[in-house]
Image (cartoon, rainbow, N blue to C red; front, side):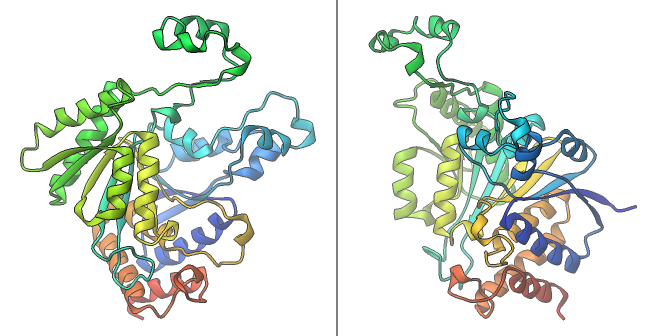
Length: 374
């Protein structure tokens, strides 16, 4: 019996291509793991009315962790329009499967390392090495939204003095998305960031929010970070507004180490940071819970490239590295990162985004070659 059971979710488009690349590298590492395929993505939304069938959730419950490729996601009206004819007008509503998994399996922490590998022509600078800790289940992504505004909700929020200027606007013309942060969620993400900084000898932790305007929810995040910082006197702690941080990351990214943010702001700064180290082709992530985790590149499904094996698999391979770390296979994780760094530094095998003409699988095979020493 295999040591690990990994849920294998290629998803849509190039998700399948990069998952094939991941398989090549895992074969080279010889990880003792069974890969359990599961259904997720646009095909299942169109034909079954859900992009995340119950049978897939059952696979997740029976495995140690999951590796995820990519998904196609579209606005509500477009999604409903693409349903099979027999599913039209049945009340189905599209909801991102990756967000569903995060919430239903309480994958409360999104870990996004953004590291510049020397030799990458897409690096903004070669000395960038920062990590974003993004709260992963709350905030605007909680999905508590209304349009049009129900009478009961209107009655409740009309008690707020700031609603006076909307008094003449009818419910049918108001959309509301609730930004919902909890003390538990805020304190958890802050403490995890400080623990990570201490464990990995990182010297600076920065909370990135907007408490001067979004006083209650961002204020809670900032207070939670301050509370955690009091227990880590050896680590420098500072605070930044999200808009200013976007500027400073472009100006002086090498100055930052570990960033903490709520769900929406964390999504924004992690993509910005990913671009600084080469773009979405290098942007890996881990969705971590207390007992389960899912690892994925953060790029989309890029349907026009599906099956062409054109896209850069490094984000997926770096996500595999995160998965190995989480499983406790730190030796294999280090070996994989060294192989990735060597391939990038040599610059002989590169996908189109890096100025090369090699395929997704060429890159994976070269990384595998470095691992095996063949």
